[in-house]
Image (tube, rainbow, N blue to C red; front, side, top):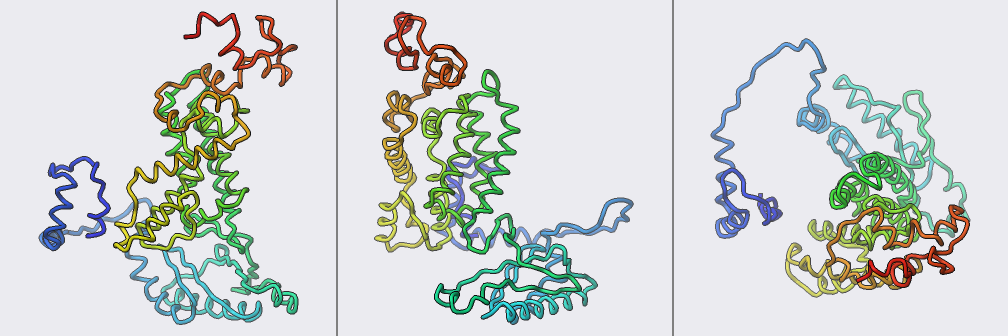
Length: 422
């Protein structure tokens, strides 16, 4: 209960009792045992009845997350398997066994023995292990010099179970995360990209370019529907964002979301689209989110990314784990600084850079994106130079006689629009 109270958001609205969250935290801080005793008394004073009902339809299996399955089967199975495994992870009915050996044949023999023991425990409860859903993954930690001397260690172990031959999987999905033998998480990111693409296709039907939802609503939908696929378990794989390919995949997903938000052409670069949409780079947000979660759980942070100064601040503090987190303003300032450095070095979106050279100033602006306004801010749209490049107009010349009709020419120099400039 102490952890739950500590994690309560102070800005959250009051409940039916009309007591602010700050008051609850202050009460627990001065009287740590009062709220737990009150909670226990409420539970002990309530009497729950039971009734029997004959089912005429449906399946009376109950919830897989309930305690019945665990108490009846899993608890006994885990106690039986713990001495046989290097590691054992269970969540509801998903069981992960971790085994190790010095060679592929020894690993296969050990795995078959453990699976046979597991099948015996299940059979005692009238159940059977589903071989079709059983898969295994092989992780190798063999130095290069050993692999050269003993190439047989590279062979894949083969398991035989209930007359079925099991071979190693190229990737295995466990609790929503796809694991691969090298822990590169490339397979996981590819699957996440597929889910994001499907979600974006559905959102695009609701958010056409020339009408539809307000840009603010589009941004909320993009974050809630698409970005959540990337946020899930990001603390497991976010260290891969140091590499170009995973980072590019994440930024490509953000680019498509930002184009939907600002109603822009598909040729707009990701850097320009994020500045116009006032949306910070998603890879930086993923690093920040992962670090915050790791620190809140008092776990080591393997990669700090663009937050080295905050790492130094955390390392220099000797307080408890929750107090080590810098204030949100420091995180926001660091995100903006890293975004500004990336925007200054970017080779694309230079016309947008002329309009918004400062990220801080852009975030202070409040204006509504429209299909036509985005064309002027990005330079991608109904301009002669752009249309001529894609063979949509015979000549890039402006109607005023200038050689090329670009966004900069229309905004600053074209005499046809002199009365529309401030």
